[in-house]
Each structure stands twice: as C-alpha cells, then as structure tokens.
Image 1 (tube, rainbow, N blue to C red):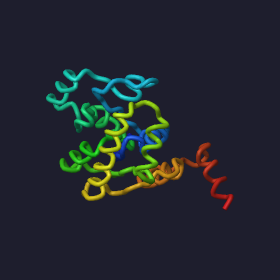
Image 2 (image 1 turned 60 degrees about the vertical axis):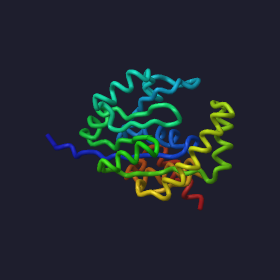
Image 3 (image 1 turned 180 degrees about the vertical axis):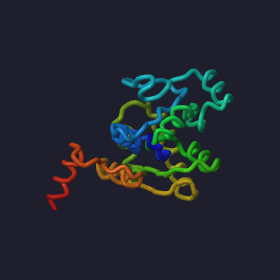
Image 4 (image 1 turned 90 degrees about the horizontal axis):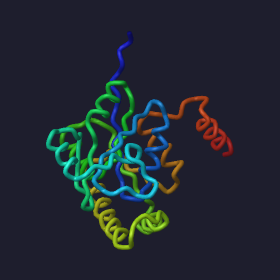
Length: 207
C-alpha cells in the first residue's frame, strides 16, 4: 500500500468581513481540502448550523477542553472564545489533505510561536471603508458591534503588517481573484476538467 504523504496546513486570517469565510468554504468543496470547523462560545447568527459553521459550546465546556489540551490553538476575541479542535486536524493531515484553519490573529500568532509549520495568509479588505460597508450589508451586528469590529480590524491589520506571523497578504477586492490567489499559494489549483477550471479558462480566453 502506497504511503500517504503528510498534508499541509493553510492558516487563513483577516478582519471580520474580509471574506475569509467565503474563500475557505469555496476551497473546502475541493476533495483535497479539509476545512477545520472552529469551536466558539459566541451565540449562533441567523442561518448558522452547529458543526457546519462552528461548534457552538458553553464557555464552561470550552475552557475544560482548553485545559485538557484538546485545542490546537485558542484565543479570546471580542469577548468570546474561539479554538481549533486538535483531533480532526491531525487526522486530515495524516490523510495527506490541505487543512484550512480560519483563525484570528491571536490564534495564528500562537501557532507560529509554537513552531507549527504551514502557509500563513492574511486576507485584507481594500480599505476600512470597504470593510465597514461589507459589515453593514451583512446585517448581523448592531451598531455597537460594528464599531467594535472596526476598531479590532484596524488594530489587527496594523499588527499583522508589523508582525512576522504571515507569509502572504491577499487583498480581497474581487472574491474570485482572491480565491484563486489563495489556491495558488496553498498549491491546490483547480483540477482539470472541473466546472470551475473550465469557467476560469473561458474567462482567461477572453483577453
């Protein structure tokens, strides 16, 4: 039986509203990719499903899992806990898959500090004004929450640019283009013959 090569980790971060979730979910439809579902103590938003969008946990259970070392990383963000369950990530890597972690700056910093190898990508909006417009269109947060998220985004953006955590910065001014750039950085080009690859080829042929 052929030996399975160990997979690789793709760490995707960015401010709330940067499009990181949309890109991760698009990439997760590829059978070569495993999208790690994070755990969180924040409440569900309308339309979210437990186990698909997040594992929604009571704070007591989250903290117990953290104490038991069941998270690859965890962080406190905007008053809520977020963490990456360790076991599913290790299993997918052992199967040779590209594992996507959609995590905050704190979590990515912890992984980098702990020497976890991977491709670290920070997704940027074109501007803070564009980010604010996206958050308002989303319509899932109050005015106070939007203000807090913009403050956090401004500080995260500065820290990400000044720090040494991320290997690449991708500006999401066009979702399809940003998705392709992330795919290329992670080494998972669209497979020949797929509908997406055919459509991409037609677009390139228009030039």
